[in-house]
Image 1 (cartoon, helix red, strand yellow):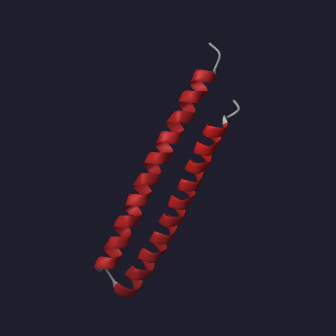
Image 2 (cartoon, rainbow, N blue to C red):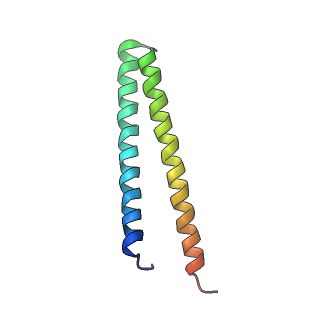
Length: 81
């Protein structure tokens, strides 16, 4: 595994923090939506929470795809021919 420069390490750390925060928002949103759904039924606040949680999930998926593609591209370029 190649050694990362200080700038690359900072970027990787930032991405990890962002993914962790998005995951926590997803979990909190799903719990809040479930509780509101049980207590109030389908209502505008429940729909709002579900939409926001879904958007966070989509953002997280996109970030994971970008990170995965960068890793696979870097691994292919570092392999000897």
